[in-house]
Length: 339
Image (cartoon, rainbow, N blue to C red; front, top):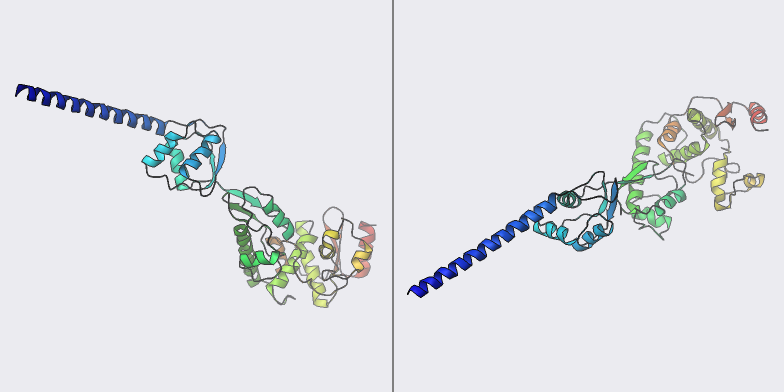
């Protein structure tokens, strides 16, 4: 009987010791994980940024952060994410750190999607080709439109027009790394539609435009012809006057646009005589489409042109223009400023 009691007592003490040992191990592991979770990481550089790829697993994402030098070891971070139940909540994007963060802070940031945004600047006066080139050359943008014809791009972004020129509003657009170029195109298109319709609804009376698209065409010409901002409304006023009188617009930028890749930087007399849909020296009225991206100032000037009797203008050579009401006065200005 005594032996049985001794064996039971010895077994109880052994179980108790194992329990204590396990408890201490758990306590040590918890303390170690807590220390790891709250201890700031050493950034490879300050500020430091990196991109998390779309669709990455926890291990793949952790490996990526290890490779860029953000994590010294992979397994503690994997364990931390799994213990906290966040292994399936990682969000792709561009992340930027201006000061060190702890692994726990890092985990919270990449699961909440607190990523920084990239930006791309679209410039007034650019053609659609230049716009596409800017998108194509940006390494942070997904080039989903690669190989698409212009008409297919318009269809994909919900545009009703069949020619892309001038349909996108020049501005600075912010995006998350990995965003589709089609998404940026769609935003720029919708922004132009909104801006154009807002300005069209406030336009001056008796303008020679049947539709807002016609106004957009002239705005693109005003954009390309304006060298000094203070001349913009006067330039619009000259073109509006010529349209009202049925005169040829005779503007070089439309001819250059019509030449396309054949233009070598030198506009010759034979170019002005060669008839194309965009040659405003041979065809009356507006060209069939815009020739560039129009900024808000060009839209406003076109729909609120200066009240003037001027029908001509010539560049002074300093970016500004000289305006004339008669051909005789215009020829004198040409001789003065260009010859």
